[in-house]
Every structure is written in C-alpha cells, then in structure tokens.
Image 1 (cartoon, rainbow, N blue to C red):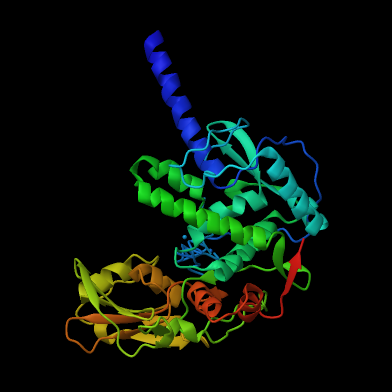
Image 2: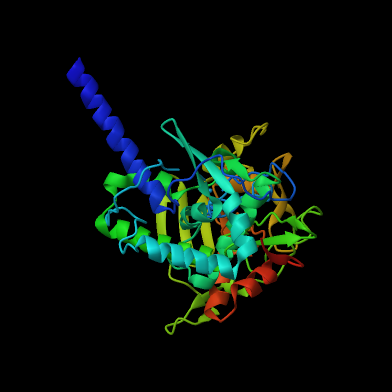
Length: 433
C-alpha cells in the first residue's frame, strides 16, 4: 500500500508541475501575495458572457471562440468573441525550451528590473493600475493569480490565427483587455470562470504530450508575438461615453458588419470589402470571381468551399427536416414538401437573415444557422435542384464588431491598430488606464 501511495503522489506532482509550466508559459509574473493592494477599476458590472469572442472570438467566436456566434454571446468559441487554464504555483520553474511560451533566452534579474523601471517611467499611472487588476485561478486545489497583462497573451493565442500580423494582434489585445475590464466592473480581481475565455494553458495541459516539437515551437512563437502586442498596447481599452464597450469580433464578415441593438451604439454597420476579396499571386487583395473548390461529404450533407468566405452546404430533404426538428417546438415537417415551404422573411442591413419561415413556423436566422451548423447567418437557400436543398453562406461568425480578416488586410495596407479599431467600433475612445 505504501508503494502504491508513493506512486500516486509522484504522478500527481508530475501532472501538477506540467500544468504549472504551461501557465508560466502564458505569462505568469513570479511570486506575488494575494493580499497586495491596488487601484480600483471604475466601470459597469455586467453579465454578458461570450460563447465563443471568434474561431473567438471562436470564432464562431473561436468566435467569442474566436468569434461570436450571436450578439448576446459575443463569441468567435469561450468568449473567443472564440474559453478557458493551467496550473501555477508560487515557486520558480526551470525553463524548458520544449514547452510553449517558456523563456528560452533568460535575462538576469538586473535586466528585468531595469526594463520594468523604464516601462513604469514611460507609463507610471497605467503601470500602477495594471498591477492592481488580476485574474484569480485555481488548479488542483492551488489558488493563485495572474495580472491581467500577464494573462492576456494566453487568451490571444486562442483567439487568433498564425497569419495575423502585429497591428492586427494589437487590435486583439485591446479587445481582450476591454472585455476583461468590462467583466470586472469596479472590482480589481475576477475569478477566471467568470470570463469564459479559452486559454493557452488549458490547451497545452490537455494536449501536451501529443504536441510535436514543431507545434510547440509554433505555439511559443505565436505566444511571444501576442506578448509583444499586449506590451505595445499596455493598459489600452475601448470606451464609449466613459464605459467599457462590449468588443464583439468575428472571423470574417459577409462584406459589411452588422448594426447592434440600441444598447450598443458603437456597433454600426460598416463596409468590410476585404472580406469578399481574395489574393492574387503578388499577395495583394483582389475581388475573387471564382475560387478553387474542394468538397467533402458527411452522410447526406455536402460542403463546398468556394473561397473568399463563401461556402455551399447541400442537404437532402430528409436531412434538412431532421436538423430543423432539433429546434425547440419544431412542428412535424414532410421531406417531400419541404422544398416549397422555405421562405426568408427578413434580413438586416448587412444581409444576415433575421427571420425565416420553414413550414408553418418562423425562426430566427441564428436558430437556423445553429441547426444546420452553418458558418454564419448570412445565407440564401435554393431548392432548384431536385432532391437537394443548397444553402450558400457568406462570412464566418456573427458579423458584429471587428472582422479579424478585415483587420489583418487593413494592417497589411498600412493601417494602425487604433485606426482599425476606430473603423469597426464607431465613436469610441481609446483610453490608457
């Protein structure tokens, strides 16, 4: 029994230490006391969650996933827009170049102090306030915390793709920071589960042993880029009339972003032409008239990607009826008649479906999007081909706020992160706190 107990203890400690390495990889600052005092953040306290901010943002949010799938959720998959952890202790860990995010080139203590002093002199007020905001984490019964600025890079990695450049990453840093501050309200600390965010530590803890060396190197590279973007925008948030905005984002619009409800006046419809453009051989944007096509089939559903954020999904009438039946209170539908019983009733100013009638019942575009597992609610339905219902979809994500694809294209054209944010979120103020 004693041997069994020893083995169990060793396995537990090894698992705990691995998760600790993952947390430190995403930016833990060393030992700190949970009793440390700090400045209080002013703002409103809300309960807006993110089912995916897209890809998270979630895109959808991966969408608050990376992206958001609906305006209320705010997500690209977690608030991904795209959700959510790694262990962390008080002791020092030994850097391991095989663990994403560990510092390979270590600086001495004098260098770290000098760099911190220089940063504090540059932004004394914001640095002091940043030190007071923290995320409380609990792993394997150990309760600790990360400063928000240290927590951000691990969130950003989950909300962005490897193709995003520095200015686009800066946008994402401001978005994630604004969301966290908004959720915190007047508090200076928040429980991690309240944020509903995907976190790099969770991913590495779950997939650690299955990651290849190349995958770990790529994660470490992306994490470092996210750290640089967070540092470059330290303390910067978006506000509207003195309050933190709900910074929804998505992977790709249908050519225009959507207008939010009256409570979100900064979410106005704007053209996002970059989302309906492809790339030529020189890498410059051009309108895509016809893209390369690739098809896969899953049972009676065929999916065709045509490029520039446009996809086609084909259903047999029986499969279409079965999926709609999964919606709550859906009436009985006849597969033989369903092709003549589908009518899109209303769209918004960006082309997303608001209401669609199927059989005797009217549904929202979001309801049908989820039932059919479509990338967005901007779709058309064709029944011209006998025995097939074809749904053509534009964009990926809920369509509110910043388009990640558009932000990246704008950055490549020379737009700054502040210009990009002010384009997608109207009449906001970028404030450094």
